[in-house]
Length: 110
Picture 1 (spheres, rainbow, N blue to C red):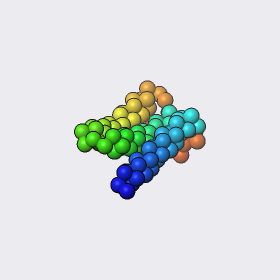
Picture 2 (tube, one colour; picture 1 turned 180 degrees about the vertical axis):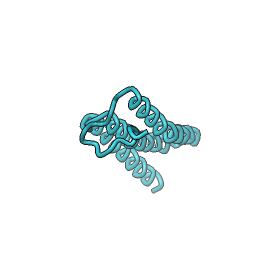
Picture 3 (tube, helix red, strand yellow; picture 1 turned 45 degrees about the vertical axis):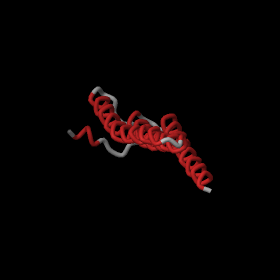
Picture 4 (cartoon, rainbow, N blue to C red; picture 1 turned 90 degrees about the horizontal axis):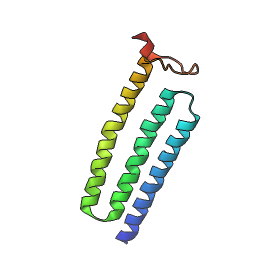
């Protein structure tokens, strides 16, 4: 019974992670400018990658592998949004402005 529950939880984590990774990929292709694409990649990509890591770590059945997966998930959660913010700030300073469809540009005010 416990093996069945572990398989179901792992399957749910892997499917949810794959869904978020797919949403990030579609967002990168379909969104109009650099900033909205970066938002899709950093938010949905982070959640998708994290869920896939947790699912793989849980499926391994070893505590050491699960601990590494949790450490990788934590590292990814801490670094992906910060790096996306720094890339967006640098691209704005070099002249890449949001698309006209965007409502406002908070960085232009500074």
